[in-house]
Length: 222
Image (cartoon, rainbow, N blue to C red):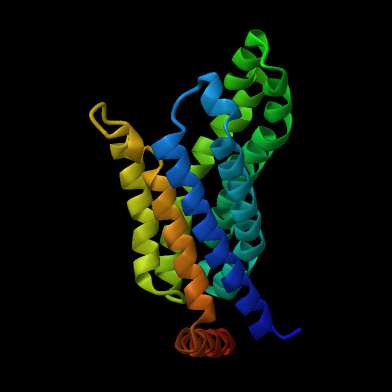
């Protein structure tokens, strides 16, 4: 399989995965904010978790193509940013929805009050992984943004959008910030991810990336 085909498949995975992730985040933020029984065991909660799980799996499959495309110029910052974002996507986008679909849905099937209480509260053992994901989210987007802007392989607006994610994330902690927009930072992140996908599919962008790669090889030989 040629590298062009691999990049195209990565681009398609990133676009579809990002769209599904946006749908998942919007449903979670606008319609599923409560921890009551009806919210937890509702069909909308189950459907949104499945959508989020599938979307994040596709993003995980597409992210390596994004990294490889600019690896030569993104350097160690690009690698660290990619690894941190991959972990965040795995934990927040795959493991949590998967748990909601499988374990929590089974726990709440019997509708026992104690079971519902446990299902609505993350177990203490998850705390280190949650903290690691929050730190990884901040550092990952920052490092990937810097690497993307410096590499100049992908459109620069994607790099600036990655920085905007951090700004939106900070603003979301303001007390008067609308609860319905609590997942806005995640939506912006998915838009940036989709941007990587479209860039991998764009013929003009692939030509530009080949030119950058050729120039990098010439500079390395000089």
